[in-house]
Every structure is written in C-alpha cells, then in structure tokens.
Length: 272
Ligand code: 15L
Image (spheres, rainbow, N blue to C red):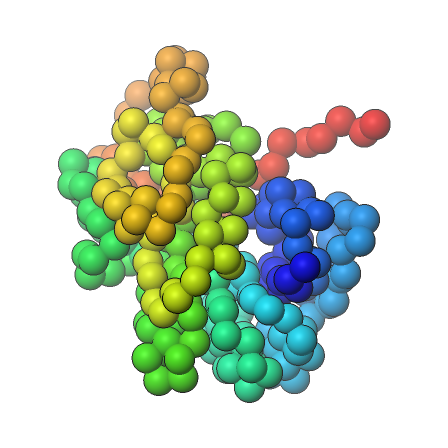
C-alpha cells in the first residue's frame, strides 16, 4: 500500500480526504493544528511547513504528497507569504530532496477567479487570480511546472472549487466538488502513470459548471455527482442582490473582500 502525506490535514478538505482515502492508502496526516478527528491507523505528524526542517521531516519516506497546507481563503499578506509561498516552496523542495516524485497540488478556482461567469475556461487559460490567496495558488502551479520540467517531478494540479457534502449557494452550484468526486480525482492524481505536469479542475460534473474539464476527463475522471439535483433548494434560499462585481466574476466575494472567514465549514457530525 502506498504511503501518502496530506499536509493541512486538519482542514475541511483534508478531513474529507482522510475519511475518503482511509484503508486505500497509508495516510500520514500533517498540520500545525491538532486533528479534530483522528482516524484509526492514520499517522499524525505536527509540522510548521514554513520551516524547511519540518517539511523535510514529514516528506521522508512517502510515495506521494497532497499539499493542502496553508491559508485556504483570502488573508493578510504576511500570513499568505509564510504559509502559502514559503510553505509551498519548502514542501516541493523537501519532496525533491527526499526523492518523492509525485506531488498533488490542490490549487483553487481563485487562481482564475477574475474570469467572468459567462465564460467557459479550460486548463490552458492564463491565470487571473482574484486575491492574494489566488496569487499564492498561481505561485504553486508555477513552482509545480518548474519542478516537473527541471527535476522530472510528477505534478498534478487540481483547481478546486468548493468541497462540501452539498452545494451551499448559487455560485457553488457551478464549482461544487463532492467528497467522493474529490477522492476519485485525487486517486487519479496518485495512480495515473506518466504524469509530468497537469492542470485539471476539481469540480463535480455540474450542469452549471463554467469549466471545460476535458483534461481531467482525458485522464479518466468520471464525476458521479452533479449539483443540479440541489439547485431548486439552493436557489430558493438565495438572497437577491449582492456586490455586482462579486456576481460578475467566477471568484465571487474573493474579488472584493480583503479577508474571508471560512465560507463553507464542515457540518457538525452527530456523536455516535
Ligand atoms: C477556496 O479556494 C477555499 O479554499 C474554500 O474555502 C472556498 O472558499 C472555495 O475556494 C470557494 O470558492 O468556495
């Protein structure tokens, strides 16, 4: 069984992924914070990826890295710089030094958030980040491209929409990514032979998608979910109005806000 390191494993996406991949891979979960949910058989290593020594320690002896660590929303530049720029560099460089070839980089829809909602974009468009956070994701994609070309690493970039058990609002109907579709795409990223550098969109098979995700399909992705099933309920709840710029661009409030609290926390699980 392959050993897979998940950085940022305590976050929402990391938590979904640890549940979905349990038993399929030997999971090494790493985060600055303690895990809220411990899963049987999964190893935890506390680490601050802005320190190279920590990045080297957690990447030793793994077959693949899923680098979720860092800020997952818009935040102050100092935080983005150390967690998402320095931290991302450290993880790629530590993986290279430790001989780990395959890196999955969950980039974001915010790397291309300044494309308009009436446009359909594919994996070949140039980035149009909507925030400092979006810029940090473009940095990670560029670093991945460099490490693939220069060092022969295998880099799979997923521009993730919004991971949630259900789509939470109108914008998310276009970018929803169900946990099981996330697990399917990540599995392709880990297992597909011959990856050099790929960009795909991390979204379910949503009718309202503004992505042409043909590159993911080419690699074997067959999404099982479509947000349309939830559309009537989501649209009934949707309040009219909102900032016109946020409504015009794919990135939504990321194009106008300076700070964004987590807009999509995990629903509370009932204690058994
Ligand atoms: C992201 O990139 C964030 O990590 C996530 O928390 C959501 O805000 C998502 O984008 C989104 O656009 O909904």
